[in-house]
Length: 291
Image (cartoon, rainbow, N blue to C red; front, side, top):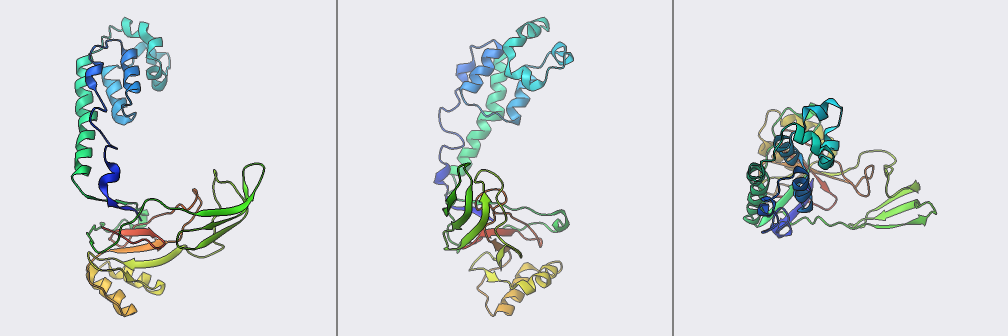
């Protein structure tokens, strides 16, 4: 599924911006609790990399671990374990921590931001694949003929509001005019019911090449064409699909399908899938697979 395709300017200064992480401000701090508080106040990432740095440069004393103190509790309240750190002979290597912080956190973010800024166009894709389909490698191809895809979507909701915050007989009107009805009680902040009484949510299945528009695949041809991809080049299979529909508009390999919006995980959420040794791009109604 293409979640976004358009100008990369929307990520300007999002990953990193000049002056965001001033490690020199940490250089005079020798107390581990104050050092960690300074990291939090400066907004450094709270991720696995930072956790690894804390373990390396402020290791939990064995005596603390022996008391059954969880790692999270230790690092969330270092001031409470100052005596244990002192007894273990711990001295914070501020310069070493800062050097590692620059190398493993700050500089990678700077490089990531520079990489995004150097490219004028950005595409965000989402795909999932089941174990049974993991028999072919995905193929990514550029197609400059496809339109932009916005990451902003609006659905108009109507229904009867209940006193407990739920909505009775919710109706959603999507951007393309499609209307989904969810009879009964719906909680906007919990699991949403499946809006289809029966059948598949797939609206379109298409093969997309590196140029030109997609080629539609009839539902009755899906199994045949999917099997053909085991032994035939993608462009040949695309030609087979075109011959079945009487239309071929340039291009080569690639495939995709569009899903009707579904809601088990929230309003208008979508599930993706990958299959057939090619990237099976799951697209919203009215949206196209993209470069």
